[in-house]
Amino acid sequence: MKLLTVLQIALLTSISGLLTVPTTVEAARKSSIAGDPGGHTNRGVKYAKKKEYEKAIEEFTKAIELQPKDPKNYRNRALTYRLMGQPAKAKEDDAAANKLSPESVKTHNARARGLIRDKNYDAALEELDEAIDAEPRNGPALRLRAYVYLQQSKWAKAIADYTVAINSIREVDIEGRTRRGFAYRNLKKYDLALEDFSKVIEARPKDAEAYRRRIYLYRQMNENEKAIADLKKLLELKPNDADAEAQLKFLEKQGATKKPATAKANN
Image 1: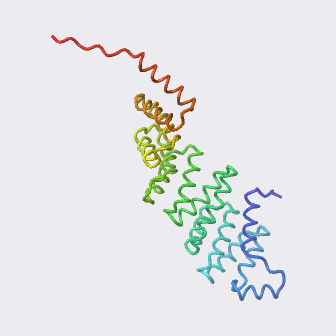
Image 2: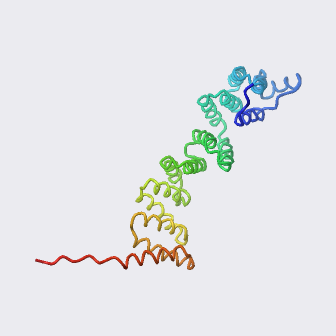
Image 3: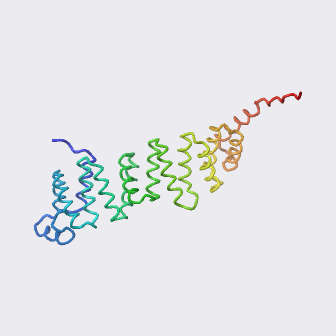
């Protein structure tokens, strides 16, 4: 018999958790009256537990037809579709459930955070895609997905998500602009990175690390005079910063050793 994967075990556990299966005929009858007309959800869960997925889908579909505004059976059917290896259908059902139960976006975000902590980025993206499908401008979900894209070096995708999140609030988005600037820098879009890093400094003029990020960028751009100015500011904030002192000494020495341009003689 084919062994269940860790993901399949987790999904079966999720299905089990959505509805406790009645253990007696009387319990089943009460379940049918209260929240499970016809007992279709109950039977669907039983079939899913036995890995009879086609039968489970049939029961959950009947339950949806009887209770089209109950998100529970959309989620049950979505989980079953995932076990069957049909993610597109699962995504459709998750989207339907999210529309009926907007608070579930928070659940997707919470699960994604746990998956990110475990560095299970692909699974986290699935959770966040579902959350964002339901609420396209959900700031926490966008920031989490952008962070995952950064970990995967998908700079353009991270920028797209951070941009929506940044534009959704009036104040300066420190975290969003810092990380978007990092993504721009990795794409060598230095002017755009500079704009983000400078906005952060405007909002937090005493943030030494913000200056450090801009210093690195200036050096990448060969803007050494501007890097020197930022290094001096950083040292005002952190007088004993050995790295800043070493960089300042190097850049000032480099500037001093440059030969001045020779003026052309007038005819």
